[in-house]
Amino acid sequence: MTTNIARLYKVAENAEGKIADVKNWKISELTEENRILTSKVELAKAELVKLEIQNGKKQYTVPSKTATPQENGITKADITEQAPVNKEKKEKKVKDAHKKAPEPTIEIADVRKLDFRIGKIVEINKHPDADSLYVEKIDCGEETLRTVVSGLVNHVPIDEMKERIVMILCNLKPVK
View 1: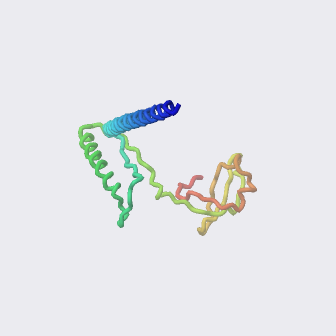
View 2: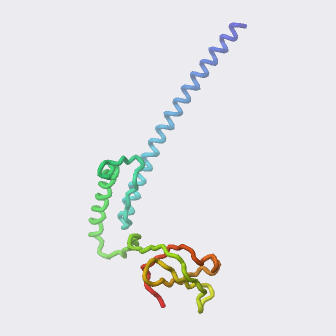
View 3: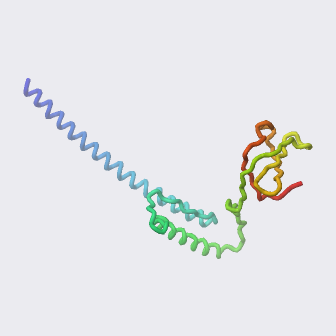
């Protein structure tokens, strides 16, 4: 009986060894497959960027998570990421020189130009000509009260609007 138990222990040890070997083999196989797939993804990304540049789409750099700040505020990752973008821009300029038809440009709004102000609603009435509009007089700290028309009748009762603190966009053209 002791010989049977000893044999069982040997078989179990052999099985554990084989399982460990298979496990290590599978891990190495999956690691290699992961490396191959990662390289394929990088090649596909590079091809996509190349095609987007050819079609005139502007490329933007994405900040990396591993960037370490330096004393002057510029990170090492920013410096390394800026170099490929400059090359892409040079390629784009060369390719744009070959194109003769001008492409329509899309301007991106600059948020810094917007004039947001905080004010307090001093007076509020319904618009005389429209049922879904309020006419508000807002104190923004200027000499005169600002008159603002808003379409909040269906969303906020007039009593809740009185004496409210609001943020308004002030650099819009006046409309009669």
